[in-house]
Image 1: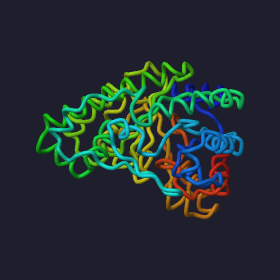
Image 2 (image 1 turned 60 degrees about the vertical axis):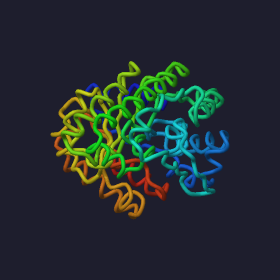
Image 3 (image 1 turned 90 degrees about the vertical axis):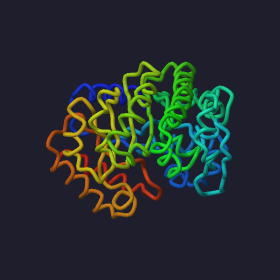
Image 4 (image 1 turned 180 degrees about the horizontal axis):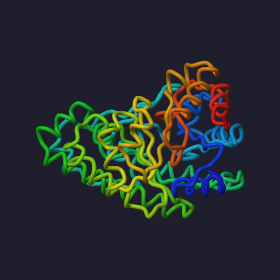
Length: 343
């Protein structure tokens, strides 16, 4: 993000309104490589290819806030790889991290990895360090420390179903595993912030919190998310969960979250009532069925309808209900922006 965009985001979090309303998208490897005309593997393998794709996005859509902006990532493999997960790579499909074990007792005994040495984390930092001069020259800065959330990582390490079963059958060992993961996350987020002083935001992504009930969220998610968000003294504390967000919504302000990207299946007015007035909402048209697969006219209509139905435009950033999905065209993004223009 440019400095002007960042300052506008901070003002919006404080309750200031803008006309036109701001538009933002979470962009990473599911969308950016193919939109830029390169394979997913080349995007991961070449820092210059990665940089050129990100620069093309910000130059093509200068009025869009791309979040977290110049995201150095390896799909879902980054954090699991630090714990020793085998990563499977394809030429033009998303990489995959294999599970380590379905034995919660064994996993609970793991030592927290060192993000400066283990897995793909050092390569993420090196890519940013090498490309930072070009990012700054383009008028942008590295703004966010980014990581997958604790439940998301745990589910990758042992399997989604196995992890959810462990929560019920072995709660103490599940807490122990989440404690190990969170200690790693704290050190990982702090290392990113220490490496790049321009960082003033934290982004955590965890859809697994959308598959558990209220009591389980309070016990297994809330304290660990709070610890992770508190790892860095940041002005922006951004949470992404595009599964069921109604369980976590009422807890977000207490956790410290002030920016929330949630599922398009929740109406924005319902989510506002759930999270309260202090949390800024990022959403909320359907990402796949409308933004990716709809016509430009359908995208424009969805955005204008969202604006008409919105009870309160304060602390809202217009986007889709999730990250930018594969296949979104330049024409559909332009139609989105046309829908953002004052009515």
